[in-house]
Amino acid sequence: MNPERMNVESFNLDHRTVSAPYVRVADRKQLPQGDVITKYDVRFTQPNVAHLQMKAIHSLEHLFAESSRNHSASVIDFSPMGCQTGYYLILQGEPDVAAAANLIEATLADVLKATEVPAANEIQCGWGENHSLAEAQDAARAFLAQRAVWEQVTA
View (cartoon, rainbow, N blue to C red):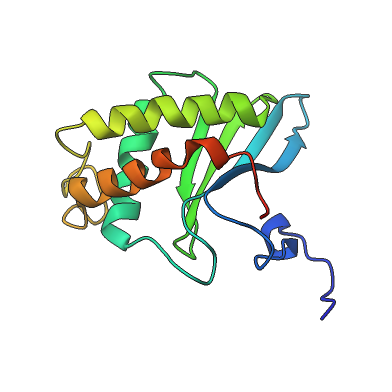
């Protein structure tokens, strides 16, 4: 099978060849005014084998989005993948994978210390009841436990 090259980088990635968990550069873009942004594939579970539950995904998104900005002014976005296997982290500039991994590690350490999910209510969130701090912390703990292999994308 040799599919046509697609516009979305992850659609061109052979998901059978990766070995989660990992952190990899998925894309770099130079914007019209010269700024550069880098998108990282932060993969928590093995594609087509396992996935995160929605409450964990949603809560980890809130926790990471809020806490990561305490560690870096370069954070633009932290968004869940529709396949429920990980997130895209978008940073200003061109930090290497090791620097992004250090930011992720520091942020997930904060997640483990959290006592509540920020903005998990109907005023600040579009589905305020769809959260679980415990599930988010379990996902963070499992990802952190594999820190030594985050920069190894394939087996």
